Length: 414
Image (cartoon, rainbow, N blue to C red; front, top):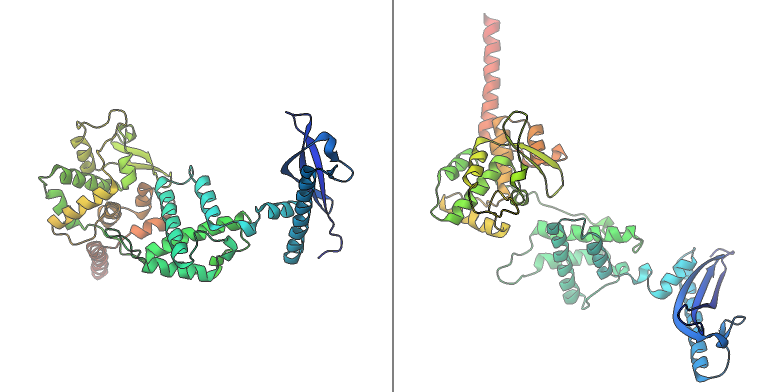
C-alpha cells in the first residue's frame, strides 16, 4: 500500500428545493484529495443538523436512530476501504463508493452482462442473431439451476471449469420431444456467444480477465449440400400438383439462379428491380445480414419466375415479389420436394445459395471474384467456403489443358 494514501468520510447536507425546512444528508468520500459523493436517502430538519460534527443535535429517539445509521455507514465505508486495500495497491473514491453500493465488479453477475448486452444490442444486431443470444441465455439458466443449484452467478466465479461443465451440459442435454439435440457446432455456437458476453464484461471492467483465454472452440467442418446440374434439371422439369410445393420450388429455384438468401428473398420488392446499363433486368439490394450492397444481373430463368408471380395477389403496400412463407415451413416443404424427386440430400433453403455459387456460376467458368460480388461477400475467403471444384469442371479444364499440349506438340512436329 502506498504511504501517501489518505482516506476520509464526511457527512454533509444540502437544501431541498421543495422544503426549506428540511435538508438531504450526503456522504463525501475522499481518497488522496479526490472525492466522490452519494446521497444517503435520509432527511433532517435544518435546526437539527450540526455542521461541525457532521451529525444531528439533540437526544430524541429519531435523532439517536439517524446518528446510529450514520455511524454504521461510516463503519461500512471504512471496511470497504480496507477490503479494497487488501486486494488492490491503488484505490479511488469512486471505487470505494461503487463497492459500498454493490456496483463494482465483485457484484456484477452473469445475468447483468446478458441483460446489458441484449439491451444495448437491440437496435444493432439483427433479430435472428439477437434471438440466438436469448437461446444461449436460456441454456445458461437451465445449466445453473440443474448443475449449480442457483439461478445466477457472479462473473468473477466463472472459470475454465465452468466453461467445460457448460459444454458437457450442452452435449448431454435432452430437449423436449420434437426438438433437436445440440450437436458439436451448436454447442460451440453457444460457447462462442458466452465468450463474446464475457469479452464485453472485460471491456466494461466488470471482469478482470476472460476465462476463455485457455479454452479453444472446436468447430467441425460441415459438408454443405447443393444440387448438381442433373439434380437441378430434374427439379426444374418436375411439376407439383400441390400449389404450396410448386410455389416453394419456384422460390428455391429463384434463389439458385440469383444467389439470394432466404431473408433477402423475403424482403425483395419491385422497387429493387431496375434496368442496368446493359438494358437488362438487375436486382439492386442490400444484404440484410451484412448491409453489403449487392447488384445482381438476372438470368433468364430467374426473370421467368418473377414474371410468373407478377399478377398474384400480393400485398400492394409492401410491393413484395414473392409470397414467402416462414423459413421453417419452407424447409419442411423442401424436404418433401426432395423426397418426391428422389434426391437423398439434406437440402435446406440456404442450399440454393450454395447451388448458385457452385453449380450455376463457378462450375460454368464464372470467376470467383464475380461470384463474391453477387453474393455480397466483403472477403473473397468467405466465397471460397461455397466454392466446389466439380468433377465435370475438373474434367473440362484438364481436357482443355490436354488439347493445348496436343496443339503445341503438333506445331513442333510441323
